[in-house]
Image (tube, helix red, strand yellow):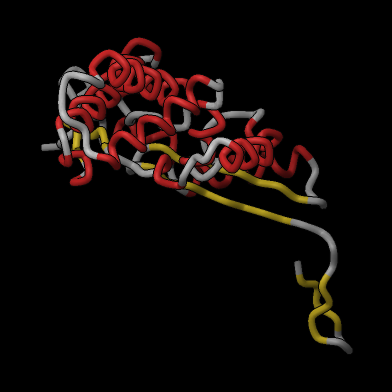
Amino acid sequence: MGQADFFKGVKYTDKQSLLAIYECGGWNVKIRVTSDDMTEDQLLELKQKIENYFNILNVATIKPLPYKNEPDILLSPAVQRDSMMTKAIITAAKSKIEWLKNNLDTKEIRTGFNDMKIDSEVYATEKMVEFYKLHKNDWQIKPETEKYFSEMLRIVENKKTKDHIYEKFHYIVDYPEGEAQKSNYIQFKIDRDISENTNEYFYKIFYTLE
């Protein structure tokens, strides 16, 4: 953080300040503010100014989603490498849709799927791994698929699913314990030979607007 100094130009201090705004899918906005100088009332005032500037509270009335329809699923080309990968990823996507519909308020669904809720992704991930365990002998599996699911099995069976998702989504999902677990999860990945391939995105859920 720089502080103007007449004689020395910019004088750097050890104070920290951060304003980060994440826009997700045109409907969801996450605001993260930290400051060494601002009071709680000032932080709240800043939050309200941001909401007013982006007109956040009126988004649902401007562009509501056809939430009564089934959303579309877009699969990554990597999913098409074999039947197991395709079917397991579709299971994950449909499981996530199921969780969101059963656990979100209707007003919230009308403004988009909220990926900040880590429990939806936990549910989808565990259903995907469960599908793999039930059907791993039903089809011929390519080596990269077998490697992916063996690593995901180690993550789920060691109860590291939330830590995995927190890292996968770049630490912006709603998981208060995540920051304290970051170093432990990194060490877990080293110890259990978990590759960065587990953080790959394989599907998107979306509504088509007319």
